[in-house]
Length: 285
Image (cartoon, rainbow, N blue to C red):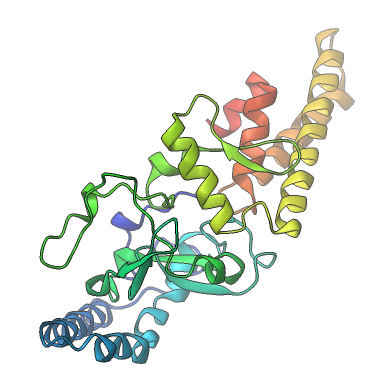
């Protein structure tokens, strides 16, 4: 999972690699249409026409789809949850809070967050390997407040699903050398539950190619650390041009693997933390 600072980004930004900025008029137009659609949903909700409400949401999927390329550009073309490009299949613009029905842990359904169907702050990019299984899954911690249109309190909910736009959620994730996503050591029981349920629901360990890709990245970084330590030991005895060149080479490769745009950069960073090589850790501090 990769942190996305969605709160402070807009399609009009001109500093997003690979993205051609929208004009302010385009963005204003998109927001205006969102507002119009939500007003229409409110009227259908008030009239008790839930099926028509949901049909209107489905009929306007192209509206959130218009932001797909921008959302992808924010992550360097990676799925926000798996942090890979092609291994997790095609991309969906996923609604973090389900737009029609929300399912609890036992599969019981409640009405979804239809008023957020066209709110870009509720959009995430997810490969359809995970998104198909997730569906409307959105359980809350027992005793949590539950937001409704008449009493909105999304910020006070305690969801199981980890959110890529919340850096506290992203910090709950760690990895092992076998390529498995695991809870951060030292996290609370509730935090561990959240990680475990998110991993299960989004197939973040079950999808074998993804786990294998993580293991490969871990092995590459591990080998680079070994090379770095061996070259550093040779340099300790005096000038050694070949060893010095090796140190520079390893640093460059570590920077490449841990760069935000690299696939599974979070795995590479975690391997560095586990191995605790101070000089290489400084590269990603």
